[in-house]
Every structure is written in structure tokens, then in C-alpha cells.
Image (cartoon, rainbow, N blue to C red):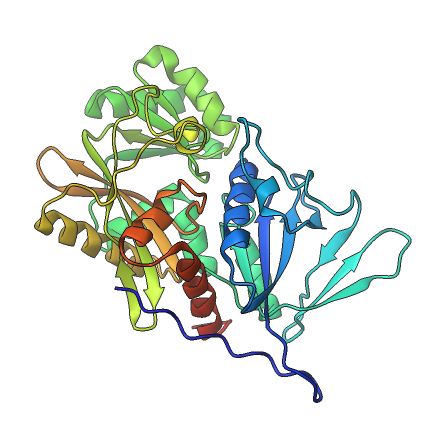
Length: 390
């Protein structure tokens, strides 16, 4: 499946001299509850970027939103002894800020500290946004980069927003004929104006589809804030936990079957699907939650033990989900293979984890695309695309 992407063209200097390498700004951290996983993911990407081909500028966004110039030390960005890294621990300064350009055609990045003359860090040719969750993966950062005309890895504004909001993601899937499971949505105003009616809405949903149900923040990932609710007695706590991360919540019925994932990657001739993977039941956890994904590292099976027909079907559905949501660059699509043999799509992730144990790079490794080549292909795909309407 794999053939190495073409070497990037060096950037000619303004007037004579030696051409420079392309500069990649890796942006990570952020204000969401997935801050830590973003740092871990960025560390793996920084380790994999070919420094012979690219200059790298690591930029971390702190939990309170400051854009910080950080050290380029991937080893400090990993989870060690269950200790979670943060941008604050990697920042070169406690007060300095990185300023991205906001006007079209200006790609000059500036670093400013209180009481000091701002320092130019040079032009950025492409941004690799390794942000997970709101304020980064949801179209907000993508909009900023569109304003300045800077190419970036991954989905655009619309696809990022749809891919982050589980309600509208499912609505798009349904409109394109993709199979989804039963779900219910509780919007902020519903809960604030009449919480009793909102609870009844969930109880009625469970009455129709059965317990347990899953209560989730509508716009979060990494299984953060998700609760499996086995009876009405656990509903209040689950709602509070979900709303701690997002005032809008989604309630989903339990789908009995196997958890199957499939990666989609943008090649020169369009999107292609990887071999699928299976997430086996995790005995120490009720479901594939944050701890199982990143701390205890559940052992996904790659490739998934599926028939040829099942593999072809899930690959087809993954690419259809990519196209339905107007995605670019990459997607991880998550499915349930039900006991009746039918696939149901649960969700997509427009910026899946790139940690060493993450399923997306593992699926592509098994498909013949190594981790460094995967990172390179994503950068090259971003450079091929124009910014603006496309």
C-alpha cells in the first residue's frame, strides 16, 4: 500500500543564499480536558519528524490558553510512572507568548516576553495541530489558520466542528445513509430550564432501548467524562460528570458486539482505509475508558480477526464517513460489529491519538505505512491543499 511521499521542496530564500528547509510548527496542549494526551501525542510526533527534511517549532498551549514556546524534548512529553505531562512543565518561560500571524500571507511567528523586544522566530510553512478536544480539534484553531492562510494538517473548519460534536456527527452520518445506533441529546437549555423533564427524557430512552446507557459529553474525546449507567440510581452522577466537561450531553444505547476501528489516510489519489483493528473487552474496566486507553494500555488486535467481506465492508464505511463529513488528512472511525453481523458507526476522530500505543498509527503500520512515513504523509497532504474555500 505504501510508497514514500515525495521529498518536500526547500523554501527559496527572499534574495539569494541557500534555500531553507520547510518549517513545521507542532501545536499541542490546549484548554480542553485532553491537554495531557495532546502533549503525549505531540511528543511522539516530534520524535518521528524527519529533521533532515523539516525544521520544527514546538508550540504548547497552556491550560489557561497562553501560547508558549516549549522545549523540543520528546522524552519529557511521555507518561512516566503514571505522571501526566503538561505544557506548563515544558514552557521556556512562565510569561512568554508565541504570537501567530492573523493576516493573509503573513507566516512570521513572533515570541514576546514582558519588558522585552519581541523576537521573530521565522516563517512557518505548515502547522501540525496535535490538539484534542474543544479549542483546537473543533474548528477553532483551524479557523485561525485559515484567516492567516497557513496550511495545516487534518480536517478543515466544518469537518473539525462536525467531528467534535457527537450529535451533529450522527446527524450527518444518517443523512448520508451510514448506520448509527440509538441516541438522545440533552441540550444546555433543556437541563437548565427543566432538569426533571431532561431526566425523564433519558429514562424514557432507557425504557425503550434498555439499560445500561452511556452518558457522554457531546464535545469531548479520549473517553473523558463518559459513564456507563446500569440503572436510574446512577443517572444523576453520570449527568453531572458529563456536564463537567460539556453542558450538552449525548446518551447512547448499549450496542452489543465487537469494537472495531479503522483508519483513513489521505493519499495523493484520495482517501484510503487501513486494515481494521479490534478493541477486545477490558476486564479491569467497564468500557474502553481513559485509563484503559492511556494508562493501562488495552491490547488492541491488529489486524482485527474479520472475514474478507467484513474487512472490506468496514473499510468502505470508514471512507464513506470521511467523505460524508468533508474530512481531510486523516480520520479514525470507530464501529460496533453487532451480533447480527451488521456494522454500526459510533463516531469518528479527526485528530486521533498518536501515542506509541494508539490504534491509528498501529493500524497504518500493519498496512505498510511506518510511523515516520505516516507523519510525513500528513504534512505533505497539508502542503498540497490550498487554504480558504476548497
